[in-house]
Structure formats: C-alpha cells, structure tokens
Image (tube, rainbow, N blue to C red; front, top):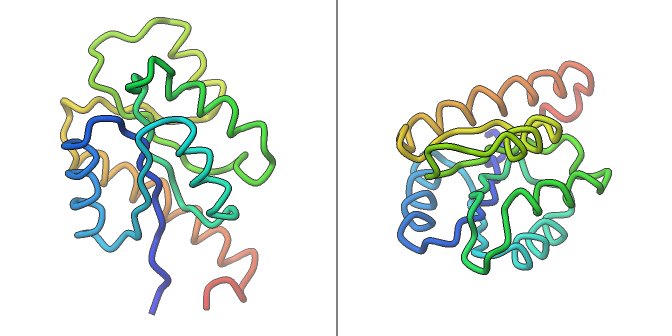
Length: 142
C-alpha cells in the first residue's frame, strides 16, 4: 500500500480550514493544519521534511501574509522543493505578490475556483514528483 500523502493547510478562516481538511482527508491525505505563520513554521519543522505539499492562504488573521511564510520557508534547504499552492480569495493580487509567488516556485489558485480544482492541481503536482523520485531511487517506491 502506498504511503499517505501529507499536506499542511495554512488558513486562518476556521470554516475554510475545516472544509479543506475534510476534502483532503476524503481523498486520502494526512492533513496538518495551521491558522497563523508561527504555527505554520512549527508544523513545517515538526514535519522533518516529510510533507508532500502546503496549501497557503495569503491573507492571514494576524495581519501577516502567507507570502511571508512562503519566502521564509524557501530559505531552508529541506523545504526548497516543497510543492506550495497559494490559495486566495482575493480577486486581484498586486504585481509584487505575483512576483513573490513566481520567484518562490509556488502555484496560485483562487478560492472561487472551488476545492475540487485545488485537489486536481495538487494531485497533478505531487504525483509526477513521486514518480520521478521512484525512478531515480527505486527503494523509495516501496
């Protein structure tokens, strides 16, 4: 049996966070959650680099940005290649925000697109990486 894929959801809105948790759990993900940048960093460190992806809201409750989390986590080698989907309800992002997302190799999706699209995108991004890892390191496929 394949190991469960692990995702960290960083979202300040409780209802959205719970919906995402239910949705990804239904699709067989092990879900960790954080509502603020400090908890997100704590969860990242606790994961010891064993996360498959992070879903990251931009506007977090404490007036800190999810983009701050994105930029700081990319400074750590073990998170340099972690798949990140920036999920936002903001209709228009500033050019600076889009540049940060692009520079840090993250993907952007809008909440208005629906969670099915988030899952589909995440599934497309994670599966190829696992297949590449399995072909380069056959022992990882077990």
